[in-house]
Length: 423
Image (cartoon, rainbow, N blue to C red; front, side, top):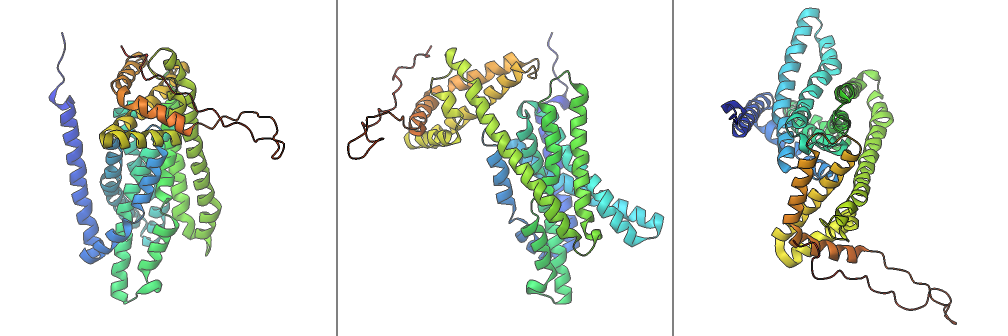
């Protein structure tokens, strides 16, 4: 006999509770920031803090283009960082700093300890909670390194957005009291440091946590110690980097620039290289794993190579949009995403890391591809022909022009109009 879930186990109840929690957190953090900055400072801070958000979000979405996760996960991550994590950080940091100042009777030392020890622990833990929630409750959408980096980066982008409103609004209020303006103002200095020089700081820290969760997701189910320790190590690394960054001002007159140039920039470059390498690895996996489904009749012969090239994918979406409008382009985009997920699932299955629901998940993805084949296959076949390198044919040397001057290359062979896999 089937047991119906309790009311608190229903998906609608969980979604409602989560939305309510984030909405209340947003209202409270809005009131707290506005009280500290004033209405005018809040509006100025909001206008300046929003500037890096679009391109940071676009960078993480670009990274996730090969196998894009559901947009609702990204919305949740940003909302958690901007509302819940920011609220936890403000309340916990203030409480801890006051407690240390009272216990030690040293307010200056409490502020330094709060910035270099308490803040990294509290803030990175609060941001890591979003990654943990997606990892636990959206496990199918969390399959590797890229997923972890994207969720962590979007969460940190939301957190930095709220924090920048607070810092820039407070700086503007200080300038209003002192009468400073222009380049010499505190607002200009704060904007230069937080928006121009280091907009990637928080995403960089939290990406370490996401990297740990991503490696854990890629581990085999039997490797329990590894699956637990990797996220913990990633979180500890994020806290250490955050503490080093916050403590750079205590390292001397040029401590900030030394940490920025000798530590932050190289780590940022290394993570950027890792992200691009992982993206290319996913494309190679698509080209290597999907031919098995061509032999079984699920995919067309041209699809593995087309799906393994970002240029061909874009050409397929453009073709579908030109001939079928935006709905057809969305169908092709979903086809590309499902096919990539299928290839990554097959790779994990061959490595013994897919889990017990491999067969069920594989069938779901194949069914999703089959439902979209009418819109996707012509577009992908066109993209394969349009992006394929022109074949080079040997020709005898021309008496005047020498080698390479011969007959025109043969056209790319067209696929039959009839779908041989139509059931």
